[in-house]
Image (tube, rainbow, N blue to C red; front, side, top):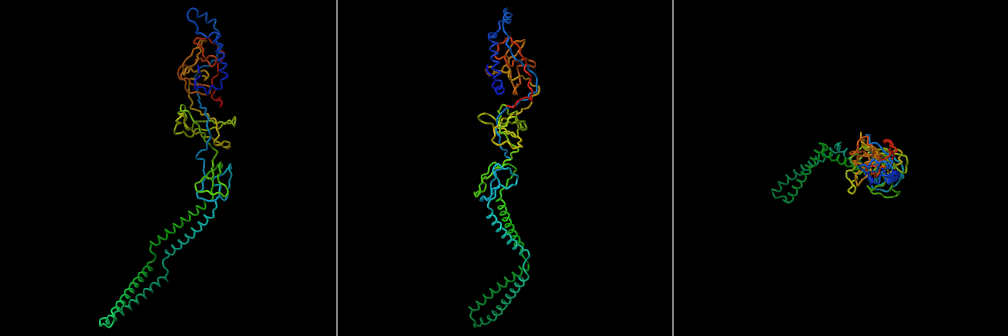
Length: 443
């Protein structure tokens, strides 16, 4: 008969005790329980000659069961508390302000890039803004009185030129009619008059334009050009600001890839900052217990390198997909790390406290054995042993819930009753105490 696989992890500490139990059971069997007790007239005489097997017992009773899962896991950084810092502009590393392992606060300078190229771009953008601003101011003020007076004078001169050419052309018309003037010269004079009239019309339009002031469309256009120049200036200033690379969070510099004089292109990671005041513990929960684990489930974490020290926390996130090979689910528990003695990558042991089960019928886990895959318990009644099949439920490191097969008050063998035939007489050596939930030692 083999121990149940579901109880193996809880019985690892009782290996020595079970060896003694097996020896005691074997001794008892050789003493008088190697064969089933006879029936009929000789039963009484046979019972008198059979030596009782010494056993320890416990009573099945209703208790508040506090089941746990003991697992192993690994500490990882919380994504929201991790910053991978990259430059937003390419440049040469001019100064390193931190070293790996250094604590930094938000906005502390990590790396400074050579700013000279960015400073030149800022100066150029400032000059363009000044130019566009001056042009807009001129348009908004309109034309100067001197410009309007000059335009009027030019229009008057053009009108005088037109009047003179018209009079001259009228006089030449009479000569042309009497064939005393060349027709070719007359046509030349006529075209000169047409050009003078066009110049007069242009001068008059300019006077009207200057007297009306600047058109709104031109002012809007100049204002748009100024806005574009100011945007370019802001971009240049931002690029200059990006030459100083600061930490976006409080935390520790766990990785620094930048070196003095090294060129970094934009978006290439140069430092990693992690806030270590809290960490995740990544663990794999068997599918049989996953349904009992919810966000907020209490956990305790321990490291072999820190004996006697326990870190409390709770489940923060549940994985969305099971492992295809094992069916296990990824669970992330959040633990406090105020002294920052824990680090991502540490292996650890985790205990998950599953929901309490009130009024659970429980017996010591040592009382349950396995018979060809079926959990069985040795019941002690009238100082005789009897094997009973049971259905087990939740368990702690010391107790297991019995769903079917026993009733409250039933005596069960916890040691010495392993493999006893039905009806074998037993002698009770003592009774095991019920489990105290608070005494569950961390593995």
